[in-house]
Image (cartoon, rainbow, N blue to C red; front, side, top):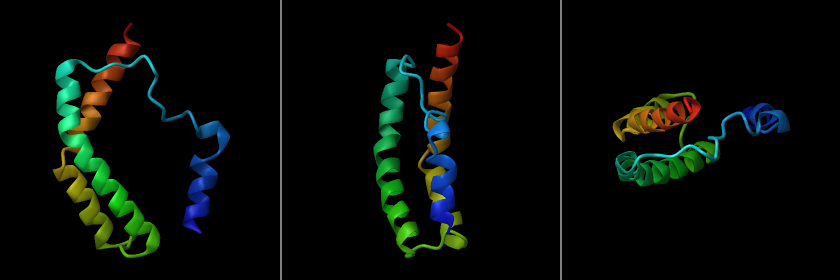
Length: 94
């Protein structure tokens, strides 16, 4: 099924480090504060929704997925990505 396919692709040893932030990346104090203000709620919602998608309570192929993405966007997920991206770019510019 889709779960096994996902594991085969993203869980393979040659992909495990593809999406890991380098250990030397650091946030400014302002970035850290802003990220923290969003991240706890996003993480909680993600865990709850993930369990519901996995168990079939929510439909990953339907409106539930669209609502999930919309909710994450409303929780400032894009801003969290921007903050992390800025920190990574500073790291890479060293």
